Amino acid sequence: MEYPNAVNQHYGQADLAEKILTALQNIGKDVDNLTQDDLSPFDQFHSGGLAATMRLAQLVELHEGIELLDVGCGIGGPARILATEYGCHVTGIELTETFCHAAELLTARLGLSDKISFQHGNALDLPFENASFDLVWTQNVLMNIEDKKRLFGEMHRVLRPNGRLALFSLMQGPVPTLHYPVIWASSPDLAFLIPPDELRQLVIESGFREISWIEGLNAGSHSTALPVEKNGFAVGMDILVEKAFELKKANGKRNMEEKRTTYVTGVFERTDTYRDA
Ligand SMILES: C[S@@+](CC[C@H](N)C(=O)[O-])C[C@H]1O[C@@H](n2cnc3c(N)ncnc32)[C@H](O)[C@@H]1O
Image (cartoon, rainbow, N blue to C red; front, side, top):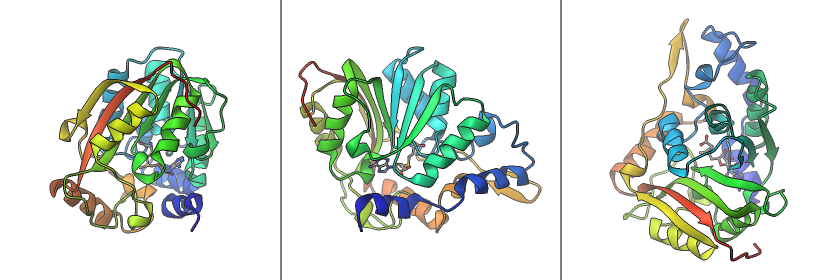
């Protein structure tokens, strides 16, 4: 199957945005007056949840008014936090069409569409001019992308000189095989984990200077937000995962415990040496 279709088939769900609104209504939320907190049980779609987002934000030293690109932005949870907590102008790019639609709808419902925009597209072919952003941000996306050289080339291209790259990702651990399915891949077809050292080298070779690099459990945690239960209904991360959520979650935990996976958090700066993707 063609790669974009494989990603859409893995993550996509028909009518996800409407499903989210119904689920929130079921637990008594007023969907015409949603808050960021209402979305917190599920909108940070990565290990470590909101804490991991805030930690990366502190590490990369965000400033008000910067132009930030969130690559593989999911349903826009990190984008909304970066816009409201730090005053960044955020553009999210996302390959899964139904995630992109949900990101737009939820952001509009929170009245944040003037600060954040979303585009449906592929990180390997970023639809932006050279030197458009001050910061490229990505959380738990790298493991779905095989051609990382091209990815970092694209990230380098759209960054302004001295712009920063902030990344957080699950990586290959010392034991190289995985238990499947996991939340981010049902089979090896969509799993492109590499060891942290290889990633670090690749980013540097792509024209970046390292500012911070944290490996292992200190770089992330396996916890995610807890579901919220009310009126006999529950809303949690499983809303983004159509099939076998509990098995995928358990396999993710097992992969980490058995050192099949690890985490990295890294901050880099674009060096002056410009290189076309
Ligand atoms: C585990 S989710 C993380 C979502 C978001 N970064 C977050 O932390 O909430 C991985 C996301 O990467 C997206 N993705 C995977 N490959 C991509 C690509 N080549 N271009 C853009 N998005 C991609 C998927 O559609 C999915 O939404």
